[in-house]
Length: 256
Image (cartoon, rainbow, N blue to C red):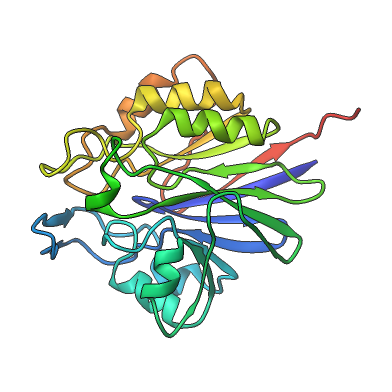
């Protein structure tokens, strides 16, 4: 019996304990505040993290879907990266972020961290054409012998890209999906999965369990955790992840 342990921290941020690694997704540890975005789109954080960066403790790896918006990498998150923790992200992030251990991967490119193979997979942060405004973003697939295969969507809003990922990785067991249907006035469409699209992504991937992130804590998230739960009602797929509580998701590999 193998397992993934998930501790939901807030927004897109969770601690994943997997195959001997402590992994943080899109680190956001600031307290509530207004971020006057340089692109003219201010972002307002409404909830602080369930655990502080100090309370999380030692981290082996950061999976950073992108670096250009504070709702995915805030000031405390930058402090975490500045400690030199290995961070896997986009090629642009590896170019723009200095003083840390940021490694950029192109889509479908892989690297090894301990016993884990991490593959960058494509993502689109909004409708087609949005990348020119919001920048590049990536998702991740995690694989390790004897462990469940995990998809971390990052700020992806594209179901056609989920279909591509399912074609490349037909054995994904657990999907960590960034939902919340984030919206800003400058983009005509959701920047992340809607609740309905998250349920459809789970169907496309044919996963056994889903961890939902990115539904709480920011004003520009237009769908809530309750909306996500309603979209998955009756499926038994969505894992209950109370803030700050370590939740184990057990997985029994199918023997051939």
